Amino acid sequence: MTHATNTALIIIDVQNDFCPGGNLAVENGDQIVERINTLQDDYAITVLTQDWHPSNHTSFADNHDDAEPFSQVDMAYGPQVLWPRHCVIGTAGAAFKSGLNTDHADLIIRKGYNPDIDSYSAFFENDHKTQTGLEGYLRERGVTKLVMVGLATDFCVRFSAVDAIKLGFQVTVIQDACRAIDLDGSLAAALEEMSSLGVLLK
Ligand code: VGL
Ligand code: ZN
Image (cartoon, rainbow, N blue to C red):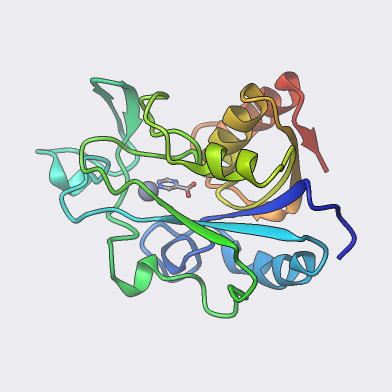
């Protein structure tokens, strides 16, 4: 372990559906697994997040009439991309990517289980109000610095990093331990937003 107990590694959504062969595959998403396993040796505190949707989740295009995957709609809480059905609770696609070492996880936080609200961020659902409980957990353990890795750089990593910095954590994203979906320039926008808010992109 090389980092102090005030620093946590947050491993975002390294799940089968976000890897090649999965329902919402991120290009080369599987290539970060070994890197993340090695990184885990350096941290005293490790948190895993798991995208965890009920079958009737409103972020799934097939739960809307005539909606194409990757199109955008307006929800009560703001704009929402409609995704191919993915990470359905209890399915193989929702399981952690095989080979990912989960033995050291202090906490596994599930998100997106409310059918009416998506949750990209590990801290807040997409209404930016409903908390997941992760902030309280980290504060009670005295964590002030977060290092984020996982999938996808431009959605769940981005939203988690932005919320974390707004909450006052110091945040680093290790880019080569992340992979992006890159929908209509979303990767460039994510990197721009994160760095402008003070997220350290390593
Ligand atoms: C994610 C889209 C939908 C992610 C989750 O983990 O980045 N992206 N659900
Ligand atoms: Zn999702």
